[in-house]
Length: 376
Image (cartoon, rainbow, N blue to C red; front, side, top):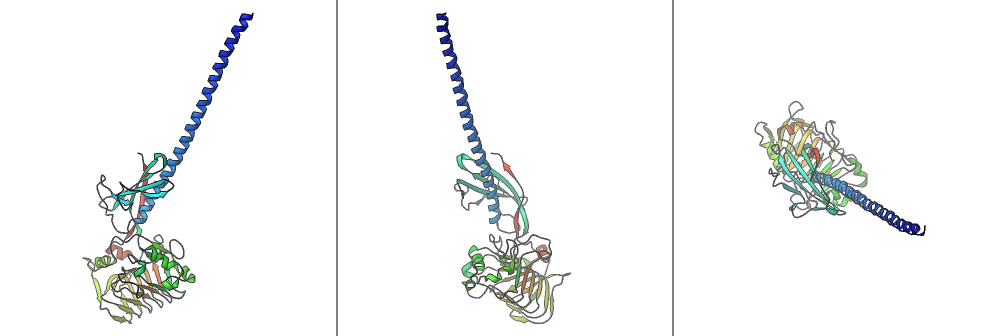
């Protein structure tokens, strides 16, 4: 009996050791799988965040692609054009913050009418996500009033009274809203919107007079146009099938005239400065090579381009329905490039711009057709 008890003690010890070993194994496995679960959760979180960062790269690229009519990128998929950062995409990345970064490249396709953007995002612990976006030209890349290429130190604006209106909401309700005022220099946008009238900005009680996308005041900053304002004007003047009517500049147009009609719009060219004080209505495109002083009951439906010695004053009950495009300023602050006062109205109208766009395609923004995650 005693020997049996001794033998039982040995078996019990063996069983205890075996059970403890199993418990340790199970505990270790639980800890191991718990650690793997944490790693999987962390990897999934990093991956999801990195994917969102890649999409942010696409949106960033859309904001820096110049408004235009085509895409002028490489057509070789093996050697794409680097968009973001502006330096080489192979040696630099755009810092998104939080340990995330991205690069965006582009190639032109479909005869340069479309582009393919590839946004590669990088995150912590080697996370990487790639998004491919297919883009084409969309809505007009102009505001109700546009001052592309004019820097703050060479541009003066002035706004008088509270009865004027610069409106980027489409007058014919056929297109998406655009900014009331479009500039390409963020410093100029700040000057216009900082409530400091001493540098040509809007007064606090004038902010609501500039409307459109983005609220009041609606002042947007875009990438410089792919063409200069002068190039756009020359394209109209040199159109092979649509002749233009030339009016002698340096005079006051004070009579009652029609510069084109709704049924028969035209390209009107004033080869110098002009003062308009009569009852004049026009349709199509108006190009002025010099200071433009608009008053009276002048109403124009379409695209107005002012270039050369660019000083545009819109006053009285004058109305421009379409878009006002002011050429690049090349001199230090002097006269006003844009002076809006009285009951003047500048209103975006996509329908009124249709004839101009049919003659010479106007700058358009890039828009996304589709995008997908590219598995790497």
